Length: 294
Image (cartoon, rainbow, N blue to C red; front, side, top):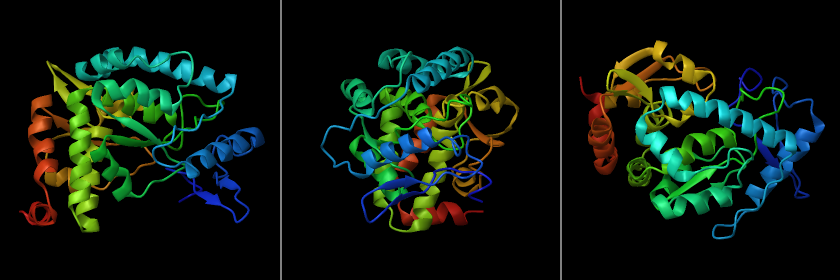
């Protein structure tokens, strides 16, 4: 599985303090020694970070800044066609740099006055309970590395383009930010791993890969779609189903390919009423009842 596709590359910290990001042989940067060394250094920044400190500055090459500028420009064009108005207004409000990769500290400094959210650096995969739990505090874990320059429109793992163009723009909307916080509170409230998985799947099919009816058109609001150069062109051709908590919380998905099943919100109000209310009130027992309902 690791060689076929990745979600997060494993990160190992050695006894001597060195950090190694284990890239699969199929990864575009596998044979690039300079890129791998920089990935190791960026992962070390996150591993050594202490909550409350300024986020360490990540070094990027001019080539990597060009990747950001290219993808940012192309996605902005696609957003005008495919993104919901709430996302477009939030992106205008946030005002991310278009010609260079922003530092996570800078992204948090832009976000905090708008919705109170700030970023935390992540070296790689963050455990579910921790990743979702800190959302309740207005914190969002993000990687700092960027995809390899040889394939600017593809990444086998979530990079800073996904985490910032997808999620930070979304988090600049007070309505979306409240949904993120509600998801975090729900993750902290439940005790069982099954209930936590259910909450994470609802998050996946909404705030990561959600679509919404806006007027007569189907638009995207999920950060996973809105940060993917290819997927944003394909989502309207997928199996689009009505929003349903049980279905979203129990449907299996493959993180390594385009999502072929998506759930449609009839409006932002419905998203808040159905998903927001669920996260605001759910506990282990209520989730068990949803799963067992006929």
